[in-house]
Length: 188
Image (cartoon, rainbow, N blue to C red; front, side):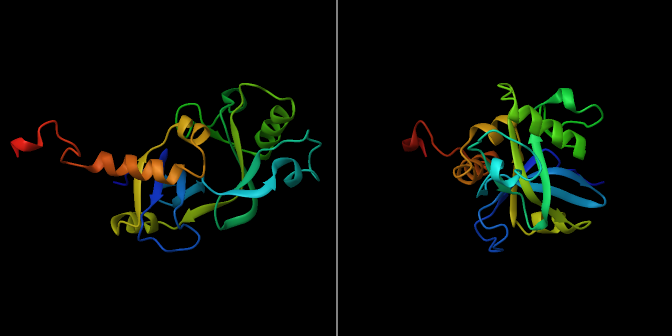
């Protein structure tokens, strides 16, 4: 039986040298027998949301950057958000975190952004990451990726430039079977 990694972060191991994923953190948004899909959460682009979406939406000047979500569908736009009122049928990826389930929901997220909704946390992505059936499982078993459970706070509160280090350290600590520090090393 497949153990789904939906709702987990994949943290690129130090040995993973694929330039698409070097030192990346990927949020797995879907994982089943047909493969897996995720979004790289630590690759802000140099393009602001306002500039990226200006030909589609009349947005106020926003400083938030569009993220590069991965090498698959580079022109596809994806939104991570916490607006549960917009998602009628989608299960959250993790509690209180959704991926825009349709073009209509994506547009509603953009309108909430333009209205300055103070309760809205969001990230906009171009592209995503994808794996064929059993490909991700093979990469995980080769130790190309470490994993840890994702939280909404990790995505929106940790600086994207720091998240790889923070989550790599967390993942390593979760796998330790001996304590890192001891109160009485002389007892050894």
